[in-house]
Amino acid sequence: KQEVTQIPAALSVPEGENLVLNCSFTDSAIYNLQWFRQDPGKGLTSLLLIQSSQREQTSGRLNASLDKSSGRSTLYIAASQPGDSATYLCATLGPDRGSTLGRLYFGRGTQLTVWP
Amino acid sequence: KAGVTQTPRYLIKTRGQQVTLSCSPISGHRSVSWYQQTPGQGLQFLFEYFSETQRNKGNFPGRFSGRQFSNSRSEMNVSTLELGDSALYLCASSLDTGEAFFGQGTRLTVV
Image (cartoon, rainbow over the protein chains, first blue to last red):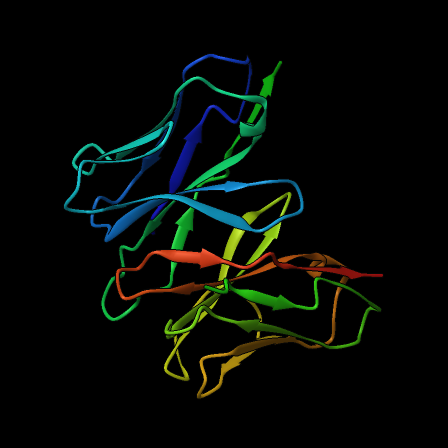
C-alpha cells in the first residue's frame, strides 16, 4: 500500500524566504503527483500536477519537481508571503492504476506560517 | 467554469441518525471520489465512482455508502452516526488525466 510522508510537519519563516517542502512515497508506480493547498476549514486547492513522465512543473512562484525512481517530490516556494500561510499536501494517484482515476494517497501535510 | 459544489456546508446530527451529503462535479468530469478528513487520521479515501459505478472503496464500515447519478452528481450516506464520524467530508472530481479538483467540503458534527 502506498505511503506518503511529508517533511517537515510544520514550518514558520519570515516573509521573503525561499522554501522547500518535501514529499516522499514508497511505491514509484504512480500515475501522477499533485500538490494542494488547504486553508483552515476549507477544501483543497490544486497547485501543481506532475504527470509520471514529467520532471517538474512551474506556476508563478511555485515549482514542483518529481523523481519517481527515488520516490520524492519537492515543492519550492520563492519569495514567500504571509498569504502563503496554509497547509500544503502532496498526493499520488496510484499505484493501483487499473481503471481507477480517483484514488489519491495523501501525506499528512506541512503547515506553513509566513510572518511579516 | 463552476467548480465542485458540495452541499450542505455544515451539518449537525445526533448519534444514531443518518445523513446524506451531495457533490456536483465539474461539468464533463465523470469520476467522483470522496474523502474523510480528521485531525487524527488526515485524509482517508472513502470511495470512487465513475459512470455510476463504484470502482474503488476504502476501508470504512458498511454504514458508509454512496452512489452516482447519470449526470455524474454523487451522494454519500452515513447511517447510524457515531461521534467518531465527525469530520470534514471532501468530494473531488477528476479529468481523464487524473487531476483532482476538490469542493469546499461538508463539515459534519455528530453530537
